[in-house]
Length: 215
Image (cartoon, rainbow, N blue to C red; front, side):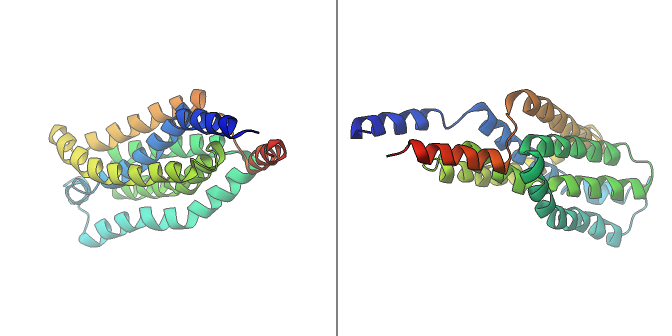
């Protein structure tokens, strides 16, 4: 392969970096982090309302439950996606996120708030799967850029989440949760039709074929 051919190939790969699957993965992580941040300005008042009469301990446990579940389930989702493919796991996790937000937004008892945040934390463990998908669909040259998008999604989610939560809560304390659920459902629908399924075996086969074709 000549130097000119290499240059053309690299240029073509660079042009195709921001593909639809990568953008959908980016939005998936943004939705996850918005979901984490959107409750920050709303949840204290939501838990303390007359409907739930929650205590500061309840608020602390509800917030902690999300992160605890994410900590335990992130490696599990990563391992399962290696076997059954990234798209299935990410699609299911987005549906779970939507159900979790609807449960919190329509909750009538405190245990429903707990259940919704725990479910959202479990399905929020898809961050590792999203990172693996980025690694699968990017070339070696673009992989660092792909992981940079994940970092950007974290920043956007943490900034937009609390802001959206504060703005939407003026229309009702349950509105931010239902809005986040709608975002997750739209993202799941887009993901189904825009992202090919990927597994570790497919990535290794593609990598092997690429290495055979290289000089």
